[in-house]
Amino acid sequence: MELIGRTIMSEFSDFNDLGELVVVVIRLLFAALLGGLLGLEREQRGKAAGVRTHMLVCMGAALFMFIPQQAGISDSEMSRVIQGVIAGIGFLCAGTIITGKDDQGATGLTTAAGIWFTAAIGIAVGLGREQTAVLCTVLAWLVLYVVPYFTRSMRNNIP
Image 1 (cartoon, rainbow, N blue to C red):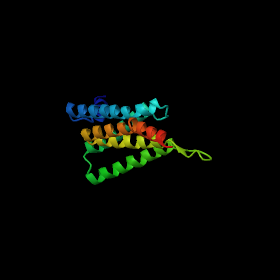
Image 2: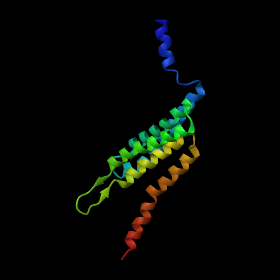
Image 3: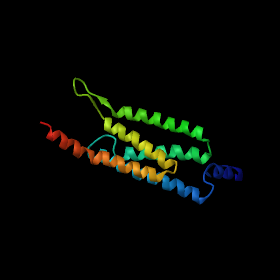
Image 4: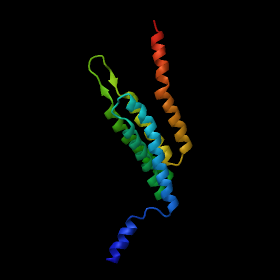
């Protein structure tokens, strides 16, 4: 029975110390916050991929970066992990794009691009590049919230 207890304890001992646990919690919560900020705009516009989707994408991307980093893999192996995350997100993004019949064109491109960018922010957070992630979130927020005002005013001024 003691052997079973030790085996279970060793199976749930990912963290070497409390500091490592705190880093994981901070990174995942920070990824959720940044992803949620970008998903809020999609939610307000009634799109299918809203706050929860963006939070999960950002946290998932961060986790996919942090776990291999925690395991000590090399930079070349890490680049393959990044490639896998990007390819996987591509499938999710493709599901948000709907091609209309007749002359309607495609819809969901901005949502797909937002999910893709949210994953990139999650990768930055997972790699411990929080300042880069914040800067990218601010820039994406400007694109999602501010740019539509300019494009609407430009369309209204066209004779």
